[in-house]
Every structure is written in structure tokens, then in C-alpha cells.
Length: 394
Ligand SMILES: [Mg+2]
Image (cartoon, rainbow, N blue to C red; front, side):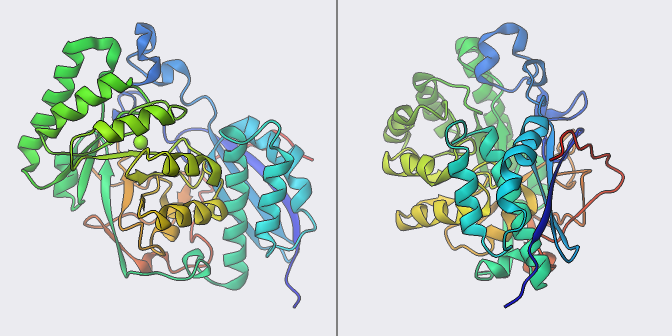
């Protein structure tokens, strides 16, 4: 059967929000003294931007078919990822069949393996992979979730990540995940403040609302165990990404020692089926949280999710807006989704990749009907008001 081939691949960068959601202005909750592994240096403790969290910016990948149809996707990676897409990955795509997504992923991964495997290179591959799925959906006139086998429920439920779970509760979300503010370098006093913040939030939301801590790789094992034990008294549902993503042994020990009923979660900075196989087989966590823009794209997330499903582990993807939603709605072991509160005070629902995408659906009363995803591809457009720059060509 004749089907358009891939004619051209282009990579752009854009700054100011978008997929690089840490790239925000002053006074945003997402950069307000959040615990990080860099907090051991007092000069980098107050702001993640101070150590360069927003240095990369957003990567936009466009894949054009020879009939002129364009698929696109956004992720984090900026100029170095744009270089990899234009100078290395594009050669495998141009002239290829759009339907050869498995082969193209394999070629992109194994051709870069000697310098890739995790991090930036996998972000770039993820961006290309998501753009291919968007293009395939547009050419077939179907939403991506339908290409994946179809929705298993009519509606998605969301928890909110941000500084104000009490407001998220009023907005209809099923839970709220707080950023942890103090790490081991701030000692017993910092630990007390963490627990006091949790206790204060618990008093505002009542006994049953989910509350979680996102620790952004900032803790050591001993601190994580102490935090989990004390937070258990205040009904903490899960402790997220407590340790370095490389410390599989630490996660396994944390899961063994966490209070009964508290979930250990991680994986937003893990990549590929092989990385997640380590987390799963070493018994590191109860929920894996792959980011579809960082773990290898949708093609890889399908494999990661199948590994987790066979073990009874939930897959709750990290952020990533429509790129996650089209997946979550198709899987029983992804029973709810994350929504990042990108309003500076976390007091209202705004699109997660604001201002880069148009038609980006957001939860209403903490929920999203499958009908909101019923457009070809991922169903979003680039906002022409955002200035894209193409740093490299090929
Ligand atoms: Mg997180």
C-alpha cells in the first residue's frame, strides 16, 4: 500500500517555558528553595536556575512527509539535542517509511549507543519518536491513543504537582504532590521544617486527600528513611525520587524500610526498557514514573509499561501533557495521571507546556474526558507567537 515517506526532519529550540518547564520567571514556586543534590552547596540552594536547570531549553522536532503533512513534538534538550537530531538522527528518517517506527527507533538508539543510552541523547530520540507518532496519527486521521489500541476508560483522573495541594483539592484533583524544600545539608532543622509543611498541608486538606513528597534526587538513604517514617504519621501517600537515579541499591533498601502502606516511586530520570528493568527487577519502587519525552518516547514507553504490567507495578508517567495522556488512557496499569501546576503560585490550572502549544487540553475538575483527545496525532499545534530558532541544518 502506498503511504507517504519521510521527506525532511528539522530541529528547533525555544526558550521561556514550553517543554523546559523549569524555564520560568522569578517568583515561581518551581524555583523556590526546592531540595536538590546541589543544595549541599549553599550558593546553589535557593534556586535551581542558579545551577543551570533551565540551561537547555525546549527542543521542537518536526518531521515532514512527502505529501507536506508535518508531525511535531516537544521535549527538553535545546541546542545540543537539536544538533543530534539534525546531524545524526535525521539520516535514518529521511526517505524511510513513516510506518517503520520500530526500525527507526532501533537505528536511532544503536547508532548513538556509544555516546548515548541515557539523558540528552534519549531526549532527542524521544522527541523524534513522538513527532513520528504525531505524523502517523495525522496521516491516518486518528488520535495517537487509538493507534495504541484505544482508550480503556472514558475519563482520566489527575493529581496535581505544586506548592498548593490545598488549592488543588478545591480545583477537583485527587491528590497533591509537594516539592520537598529541605535536604540533608540543612540537617535536623530542615527535616523538622519539611514535616511541619506536610503537617500544615494535612490540616488544610483533611485526612483522606492524597499528599506526596517529590524529593528530586536530593536525599541520602538514611535521611529518606527518617523522612518517610516521620511523614507516615501525617499520611504521606508516596515518597518520590528520594535518591540519585543511579542508586538502584539505595532505592531497593528504601522500599524495604519504608513504612507499610507508603509507596516508593521513581523513574522520571530513568530511560529505556533496560533502565526500567533495573528498577523493576531490583525491587526499587511501587510506581515507575517514566517521562515519555525523556525515556525513549512512546515506542519505548510501550515496552517499559509492559514490563511493569507483568510485575503488577503501576506506570504513572511524569508530566508531559498530551504525550502522556494519549498513553495513560490506553493502559489499565496507568490508572491516573500527573498534572504540573505551572501557574507561578500554583493557584490555577494553566496548560503544562504554556505558552508553546495551542489546543493543549487541561483537566477540568481534575478530570479529562477522552473526547478532549479526539483529534489526529497528539491534537496540538505550535503557537506561532513563540519564536522558534533552528541552530543547525543538514
Ligand atoms: Mg518528580
